[in-house]
Image 1 (cartoon, one colour):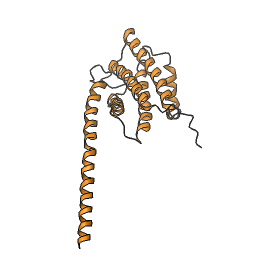
Image 2 (tube, rainbow, N blue to C red; image 1 turned 90 degrees about the vertical axis):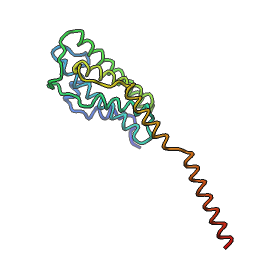
Image 3 (tube, rainbow, N blue to C red; image 1 turned 180 degrees about the vertical axis):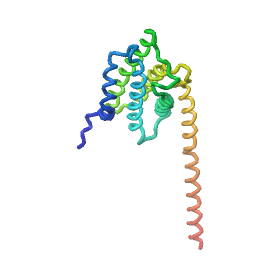
Image 4 (spheres, rainbow, N blue to C red; image 1 turned 135 degrees about the vertical axis):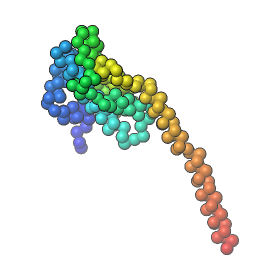
Length: 198
């Protein structure tokens, strides 16, 4: 039997380049003024991994509206992610702003540990909830570096996805299926009666 003791996120994390892993490890104590831009790279890297792990978990079934919302929120925050030398990127220098980045990095890592625990237990709804928390941390970090870049909130994403989901579910109408089945039965009965009278 295959070894299932190792989570998908652990396997993916091990496949990262040594440079990326070193960068993540170096930020375990937070960033300072000299390496604050590293937070921009790590935040995108970490959310991308978690997003992929979650996608793998839900792709074989029919995702609920909340699960779709979590995934699309992560997609929205990662969309058009800037390089550190992008002219729109602001380099924070004051200690208060850097402290805000570090708090979000710490919370992000704590949530990722929780996410991995739920993944091992195959608790997809819990993973979905924690993914939202991870994405919010990453959105906060991006907001520091790109203050003029408008990011959607989870609630905004959720409203749109819920409407789409309701419409899709409305198209799967069991009453219509029952009506079609009744029509088929009536046609078969008529055909049988015609054959008997022939």
